[in-house]
Image (cartoon, rainbow, N blue to C red; front, side, top):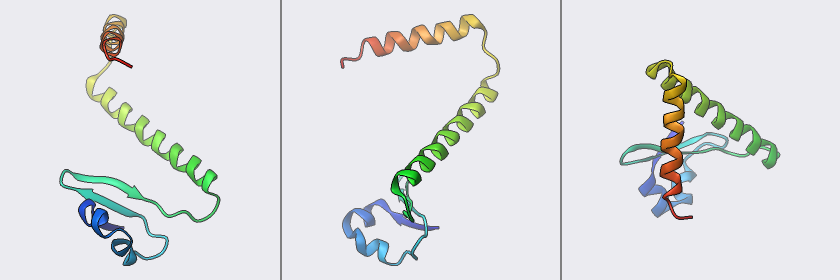
Length: 95
């Protein structure tokens, strides 16, 4: 996988990608570390988009499961308290 800095990608765009072999995924890296994947499209864009979204959803679930394992089990009261806290925070944000 090729790494390209966000700055280089912003300033040189197509030239920065010219050295990347066809079909290779590219990782855009910023000052704070990895930021984006550039994934080549090989066929049906709609189907590939679905597959990519599925993969991202699974990665998000795995991250949630990891966090849940670190935190441990929550009681019903703790879950309800978090829900109330989130609702209060989102109600105060203007739409």
